[in-house]
Length: 223
Image 1 (cartoon, helix red, strand yellow):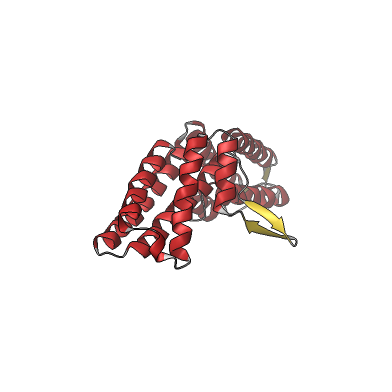
Image 2 (cartoon, helix red, strand yellow):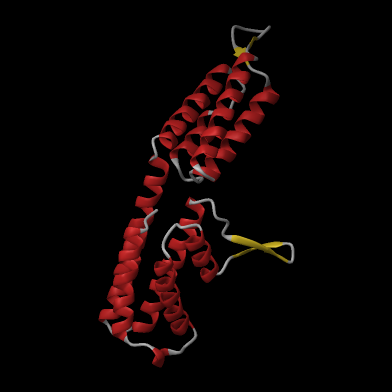
């Protein structure tokens, strides 16, 4: 989902929260106040769905909202609005993409270190598979970032697109150049040779060059 769509949804949820607050009533039994339970339940479910799809269930926004916005009263509703406002500010400031990109970079760096170690020990074949898998995941994340679907429907079920298809669509949408597309195709081809046991069709030196080139490509065409 693009940033403008995320901001639109965040604003809709903030308006929803205000409607919930607008339903505040005084209890007839004591001095406590409450809000419409049906409206509150809808607000809570919609906000949690937004946090889960945008940030993930392990993110503090999701966990804080889930833990602190539990009861149909003005206090919990107000807390929920505050958490949503903080999330909106983060999205608006561009931190969502930056943080995701940083986390991905750290993970990919760890895998590249592993691939480098495998190469140093003359295990060129698993290194080639690992580097190719890192590249494919980067292509998927680039597609997600730029609103390009990463799945197709087959026999009524969603199926992940193949790496070559992602590569083609990214180039067609000018996310990177046709020259980059050709390079990516060659790297994926080397990965496929390794994955299918065609070990004699490439050398350790080619895997080494592939690793360096993929790192340069991912740094230049970053998330």
